[in-house]
Image 1 (cartoon, rainbow, N blue to C red):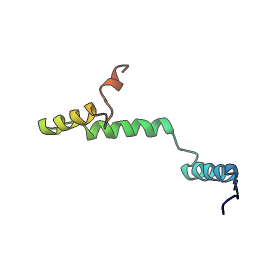
Image 2: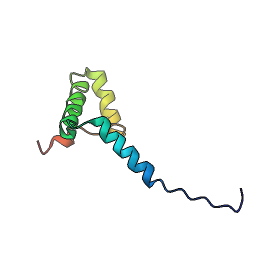
Image 3: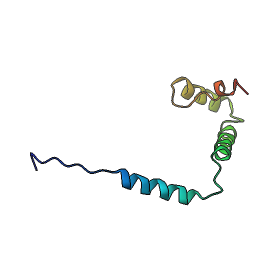
Image 4: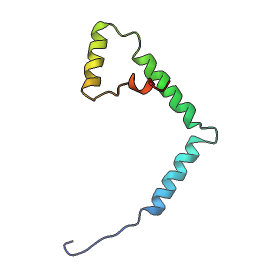
Length: 76
């Protein structure tokens, strides 16, 4: 296929995909509420850690693997 250039416009496919996603989410989808629930789930996941778990969590935050959740609460 040397010397043959192909071009395919994905615009229509992308519009179809976006439409399908929005239909699947439904009219009652609330992204702010979903994000708040996700934050609550992370709060529960990282709460009540024992000393060893907290040490590992702190190492993962320091390494940049996990976000520093404490710094995101400064505005709260």
